[in-house]
Image (cartoon, rainbow, N blue to C red; front, side, top):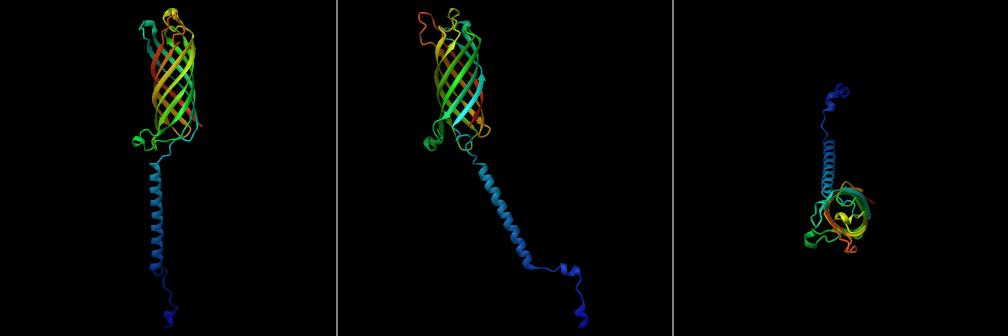
Length: 231
């Protein structure tokens, strides 16, 4: 008995001893960690499908754009087939919040802006050389939750000046009135920057003020592209 009392258990035999309490604690910690990780992944997945509506909280946007428009003026004379390269600088103010969520299934959900725009139109082909005009009007943006692409429609009115050339079948005088209608979509890169691509129709004439000098209005149609910043 005295020999057995002094005998030491080898280290490798002690290390192999099974402890049920330690096993249960380790299992509980692993299960809890896995549950937390799964919840976190699920939350991130849910958030991924609920992207915030970009830039809808910003009040102002500014943008610079260009494009190309073409016109066969009403008389159909060959020298009146205009080709115009516009350069456009505009600012837009948001005048309401996103609404109409449930109207007609939510397809009209969106908000309204009012834009102010200055144009310099270089006439590449036509009786005149250039037109400068100022325009303003409303724009409606169709917003769906999580979309980065925002379709829009717009319309505007204004006035401007041209180096008129009535003797060659162009505008009857330098001062003219203008109106436009456009549609397209903008792509939000982030809350600040966006790209707009659209198609625009614009009318430019003097409303008969040059009478008896004949006036041949410009009716142009074509694509436009612009880059903008929201703030």
